[in-house]
Structure formats: structure tokens, C-alpha cells
Length: 319
Image (tube, rainbow, N blue to C red):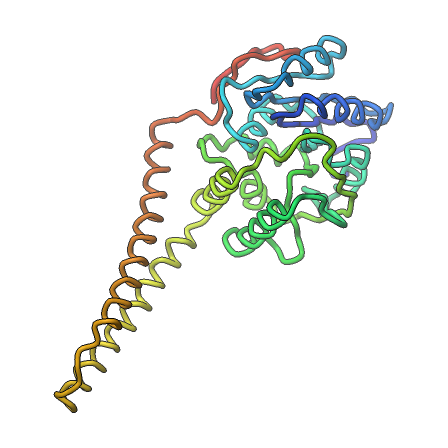
């Protein structure tokens, strides 16, 4: 790999939320998979999980100095938790994966070995997704959003399991705003990206931490933080509606002049008013979403707040 020797250091970054029954197996699988020639660190970020995941992580960190724990003061979300983990990642290659065991840690070298001079980031591509229907629909929508809003190359799939070179993470860490979308940060940093097929596993325990509310919030991050296309769409829609309204107004006047007995259509008038009013409200809400996020960013709202760290020398900080 470009700039990476035979012996390299690997940094595994895992955001943890409601995974007390699965995270031990994920850590064990990583330790059993890493080659003897490579050094490694496993950075687990406790995103203020309400279960006993921190106790599990503390026990693991006490038994292995390669396991580092970052505990956040409140739930900041998966992508902000990743940013907290990236802050402490020191490896030549950084691998991001989930805490539920669905991402196959034992196939990490398939991603790592694909990194070369022509590739900076390698995403896993699942032969068959084992998510429920709700998550599959959400993933499909996110993929479409990425292609339309962020210009993700055709044929490339992004998800939470990927390996990337060190300089990509160094660039991502420069982003300090509270609304984080890791995929957007990666795709604006490099276009040298590829997919490698891996197996997606059935969920062993529990259910996904992504509710409809969290998925919508994540999509909004992608919409508003990395693209102005929604605003352009709103402007274009406004011009189109104004054009239709102007033409319809001329037609109405001409028809009335040609036939004074034509009654003014109350139903059609109400339909037009409701349509235009609804579009205006949606567009005003979209603009308000942008302005609100700008306001919060200008107020230096933290991307994450670290309560406690384990096996990390420089202690916690707020970003």
C-alpha cells in the first residue's frame, strides 16, 4: 500500500450503544484476526449507552492495553462518536465497524489489502443485507441521497464498515461542526474509493439503535452539511410554480374575456392555493433548517463531550 509498509499499525474504531451482549465478541474477533506482524489498537466509544456496555469495555481495557475506551457525556450519535474515536486513532490504517457483530471483523484484511496507490478508502459491500425491511429502506434512501446530493460515484456503496488511509482521517478530524456525516466527509476528501464484497451477518442480540427520528436526523445532516442542492431544488421549484401560476392566470383572464359566463372555479382555486402554500411552507422549513444549523455551529456547540477515557494518556477533551 502507498506509504504503508509490510508492518503496520491498525486502528479499529467502534461506536458502542446498547451492545453489552455483543461488543465482547467483536473485540475478541478483532484480536484473533489481526496478524502477528501488525500492531493494533481497538478504540471503543461509549456513546452514553444506557446498558452496561461501559462496564464490559472497562473490563476489556483492564485486561488489554491495546483496547482504549472513550466515554461520552451524553448520546451524540454514531457519527459524532466515530469522530471522537478518530481523534485518538494513531494507526496507519483506520477501520470503522459496528458493535453488533453484523459487520464481519474477520474479513477486515479484505478491506485493508485493497488499499493501494489507486485507492484511499475501501467500503464493504454486502452480498445480502441482513437488516430488517425498515433499515433496508433507510439504507437505500441514504444511498440515493448520497448519489444525488454529494455526487457519490456510480456503483459505489457507502456504509459503516470501511478501511481508509491515515491521511483521510487526519483530514476528517479538521471538521469541527456538531452536525457530522462521516460519509460526506470521506467523499469530499477523495474519489479514490472502491467496494469489496463481504458477508453481512444476522443480528445476534437486540435491535438497531436507529429509530425513524435518528435516521431522519442523519439524512438532514447529509442534506444540509455537505450540499446546497436542496436549496437549489427549492429555488427551481419556486420558479416552476411561479411560471405555472403566471400561465394559469393568463389562461383564466383570456377565458373570462372570451366567455363572460364562465364561473370562477372555487375548487381549482383552493387546490392551487393549498399546493403553493404547502410548497412555500416546505421551502421555508428547509431554509430554516439551514439557518438553525448555522446558528448552532456559530455558537460552538460541541461535536462531542468526553467524560472519561481508559488506556489513553492525554485524557479527555471536548470538541
